[in-house]
Amino acid sequence: MAIVEVCNVDMNYHNMKGVTEAIKDINFTVDEGEFISIIGPSGCGKSTLLNIISGLIEPSKGVIKYKGSIVKDNLDKVGYMFQKDYLFPWLTVKDNVLIGLKIKKLLTKENIAFTESLIERYGLKKFENHKPQELSGGMRQRAALIRTMALKPEILLLDEHTAALDPKTSIKIMDITDKIIDEKKITTLMVTHNIKQ
Ligand code: ADP
Image 1 (cartoon, rainbow, N blue to C red):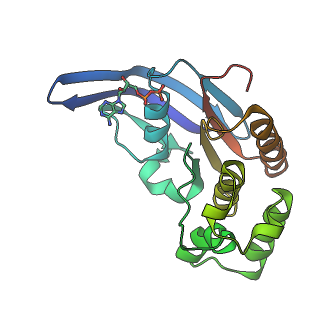
Image 2 (cartoon, rainbow, N blue to C red):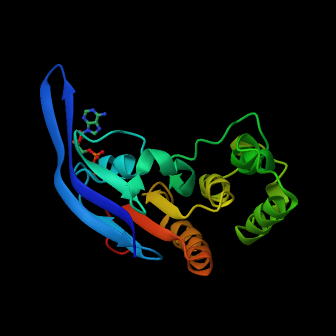
């Protein structure tokens, strides 16, 4: 069954210099549990597409549906990982990874235990009381992934989330994430310009 439907989507950016046609007439569906990679060179519109699928920006034309209803009614089902970690520098790693659950008033025993298990799996237990600026880029990105996964998204959007990291660290992080995606059967769309990923 299709969990995501991308229907006739165009995106044009308007500015003082004119119009940039970023994507045109995009149509595809994603089945529940599928892992889809969107591959293409820089500037071909990958991030634009993911931003539209996430509901962050509205397309110029077309519509995104989750399980048949519009994306705006389903924002809580989506987890979005960016290239940047966007961690709060004044919070510890633990408080950063719990922030989504706190905002959504979902700090249940079960959710906290699940988040703690993610901290273990991503190897950040020893650093949970550190501030983000005391961590390496790879560790910060792992913390951002835990924050996203803690909310148990049904659909995970990954936008070149390991692009800024060295290849070894990138593969390590992808491996851990892939295992969690498999176990939890999370439908995933990953954007990359790197065919090897
Ligand atoms: P990719 O993720 O594949 O690198 P993007 O989706 O970031 O591609 O960009 C696609 C095109 O849209 C590029 O030409 C880019 O310059 C343009 N673009 C992206 N975001 C904006 C924006 N906010 N305003 C104007 N043009 C944009």
